[in-house]
Image (tube, rainbow, N blue to C red; front, side):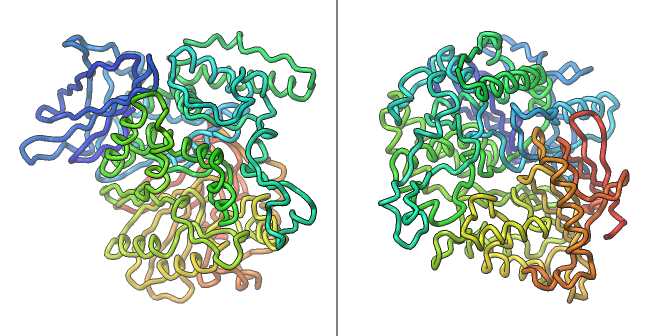
Length: 605
């Protein structure tokens, strides 16, 4: 994988069955140094991180193709499996002047939709064959894995891969999990930690109803990951075709007297079989384009840090806390280091290596480091500048009601964002959740929140917290706010394009909310059509309801796609963002089935 790439450093990441140091060479980058770290995950599994830096105070060339090769003991490694179609080498672009970007989120292996990363790979290959302008960076803004929503066949494959690679195992956290995964398939949610009703506050309705409080609130937590080796194995199986060569899919068999579980297993196995067929094409994409990511909740668990009450219950339980730490550790290993090029995460990675030297006997000692780490957010000094927001670990907690949704960013992080945007004419923000979402859906979420059920409908929008919403709107209304702000978001499993301007400003600035979700996931189409109609009726431009929203001082224009009158799209897709002179000129969705949706950027509704 080509991860963060910039003129001063390029990060290359791969996993090998060997710990031996490889050598990176390039005919384009002729004078550079390389530093190397490797992390053992098992007897036959080693993560390699290579940081390439130019020598003699020079910089790497930007916006041109850069080839690369790997060798071991002076013998070239055959990378032909990673060549894009029609190419004879692996190559990538170090982005500086951004002209087009691929962006998406939410990739669930067992969802029945098509994998849009295959479409992205084919698109990149066609552009390179034609020697025409190609996207210079891929951005994935959340839910790269679904640790809380794991298919039955995938959990069995995880177990087989752990054995095949002899991944190190941490001490068992929950006694029933000492046995084969097949014995707890589709029932893990019943053995995950909870708070007994009599231990809950008497101010909570659950106490009087005698209901235990589940720590992990995902509605699909039947096969929730628990141990650290399971998280590692899921990452490998989500991105590596080679790992599936170690597993016979036909051997993934589940016998149960539960007809529902049996039927679900067959459906999931069929979807995963199709997913695996496309992995070699996806690998070619990730080996030939620089890509950066940001976590959202499913990378760790659903509703992660949604309310202060959720945090209080989960982090006070040693098993629940360990599961969250495992999710973050796996994110560090497979995503985090590549996002910042090791600027802050390299030190954390070295600390992790020390703690797993003897298997995972000392892994608990590392938890305080990973849970206290506060540098997951980062910037990329491209034109326009990219600012990636960590909206999960810097929550603005509600101190008066622990069951109220937390703000997605606390005051300090919002002030830091304000400072980063000051003086910029154009900027790209990566916000996993949309800043400007669909008002009718947010209104429904507000109703559930008023009834004391924020976890039931994932009340995780920027407007759900008064302080965070007000500060964010102040940033966007400032006189020196950027002329052009692009917000790239996902999370919601449908896509849309909104443009936003201040109602009371003489400054001709524009905010674009570009939401692309999911790469391999979809919102129920019939329900989305109803919500689309409801939103058009209740929140049309002249509707008085607009003045009762927290963003009433901002005019939100909904752009329809050219083929219909709808502005919400629920089809698996990767988005293609076109820029000219740092301004948005075209916004398209490249769908998993090969179709293309283009939004009309001129039309306003």
